[in-house]
Image 1 (cartoon, helix red, strand yellow):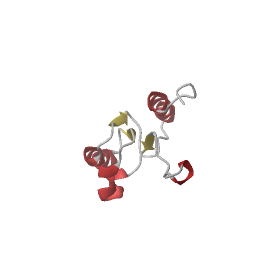
Image 2 (cartoon, helix red, strand yellow):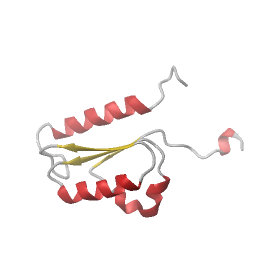
Image 3 (spheres, one colour):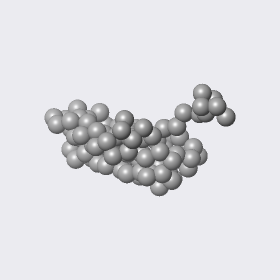
Length: 99
């Protein structure tokens, strides 16, 4: 298969307050390092993300932002999301030097 014909691969994923559980059986095929970020006040979504995390096979972490609701509107919570996402991408995405 020529390089232009190869399917693109995903190097890393960050989900903020998402519902990965809705991906169903496809979760078992996720191999990209995945960070699931959920607000600490969003109890239902925490549980749904935990269920999804258990079905995924790649490196996956669930991080809870204390005091944050579903939309991360509380002071300072969105900044915490940004820091978590930045650190995740720095950890898992290849740098230009690495190719």
